[in-house]
Image (cartoon, rainbow, N blue to C red):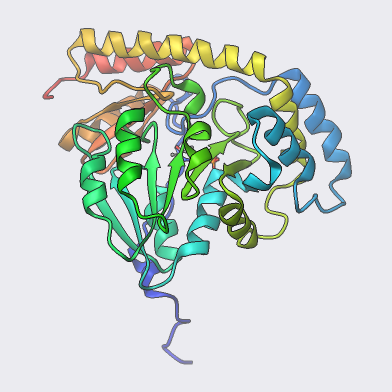
Length: 358
Ligand SMILES: *Cc1c(COP(=O)(O)O)cnc(C)c1O
């Protein structure tokens, strides 16, 4: 038998396997999952009903063009349907974008640390990833503009940034966009847009209108509570939307997800009340952490960031023993999602008891 093994792309050797947010349990069974930025609320009854109904048609392929969903998004956000492209979560749309621009001499630029999907999907697309370190836990837009070359095809601006929760403001973003060449695409990843309360944070849907090289990513996974169904979308000018539709895996958004997303847009006022509740809890959690003596960057998302350095993995292990799953990143820090009141209290108790070196 040959000793040779099947051959794979060298880029795969750089990838750690994807680490999903873990579920943990305390010895007494208590378990709070604060590791994936999910909504702590189950589906609304109106949405659950639509999901059950859509399940009866799963012998049929979904509408590959997601026409009804695209029209519902177009109406809700007052954008033309030709400006919309959907995908299997906004991670799916991110992959479609990178497949549309990635080739060996193309560069993809983003801040680091930011969303974990960027390096993996950029690598898979064959593009070269170029990163610019965060400054004070926030995108350093002037440094990012300095890092643009003729090869830069796509730039991610994650606003609010995952995992730090920090934001860029309208004036700095406009200044940055003015420095980006017209043939370089800027992707505003707004997965947490519904949680933003800072009035100086720009809405991508307004920013992209006069800028053919700006695209906006949104998702039904967070505020709309459909993380398990995988549906996200992009809003951008027609050439960008058309390119992203070409790279979609056929039938990437299943029929149940399409129906649930439409129902969620119809139930938006109810869902946004839930977002308000999470935002209230976010303030409570951050204020309490500050009172405990932690430094916590201001957050406009549904999570907080603790820069724990060398203590990061230990903090995650201590949290896990208390039944609280958090998301540790190497020796950098941990991201903790805002959950329901009880979950947040459990996390705050862990933080209160934890010896502080930061
Ligand atoms: C959660 C998240 C997404 C959304 O992912 P889905 O694939 O839509 O579930 C996108 N971008 C960022 C920065 C996120 O944190």
